[in-house]
Image (tube, rainbow, N blue to C red; front, side, top):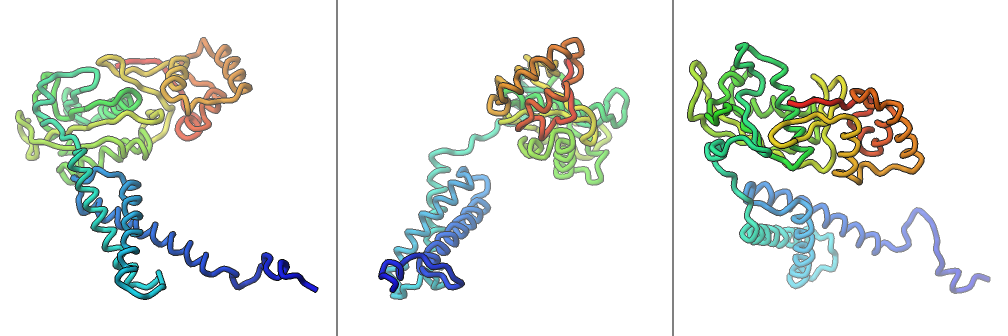
Length: 338
């Protein structure tokens, strides 16, 4: 004979034993998805005024949905939370809540405005500001030069690996806004949008997709335009510091990887020993290795101390748990300066 406890024990089958719990879980998942959609819609509506992150907007939307369900409970007699009218009222209330909260946050914590490019150029070059006459056009040779593209890419990498900074492209060494006329002339469509697409593609190849998305670009009219070109604009590249090492690769993403940093007003390529120490100090979470690996690293570094231009493969694997496995598994770090 089966006891009452046996009858109420767990039973597995095709039909769920507690459908109400499953419905409640399903509703919470649906509410989370709706909250995320509402957050994305509000971010698009408010655009530049939006200072809340997507995660914050989603959490705010989730709270708004819960409040909306309370409002729906006062309006509708149905006990079915899946009822479209109840979900609709909850979503509407959540949308209003997210918009109001976003506007309040934007008012209390406004997005910092950027200083006009012309005013920035007057300050002159420094450890956080660099002028580039062109991104791909060699002014002296009068032709496109891949070396100019490399200079732009490694300067961006150096700022990311340091404290961040700003590059003004289309500004000469004297701070004159000469424009991007020669660069625009090399593009199929000579305008700012096409230039941004090209330069982000360059960064994606040389620095990686994640790093290419970090800099912010804006444009302004050139005050000292070059003769013979129609469009004369200057590009400002605002570069934040990176949360992980950014390595410069060769053209089209091939070749050996290099670690560049800012040292004063210059851009320097680190030697192997300096690079390892710099990475371990600046991004310690990406340089955590086991005791055995540290021992192998020490022995390998001693063997290769007379050949600093090449990063030994074992060193790459060592810093690799999160760094070199992604970006420089077959790379090397050398010494140099610009």
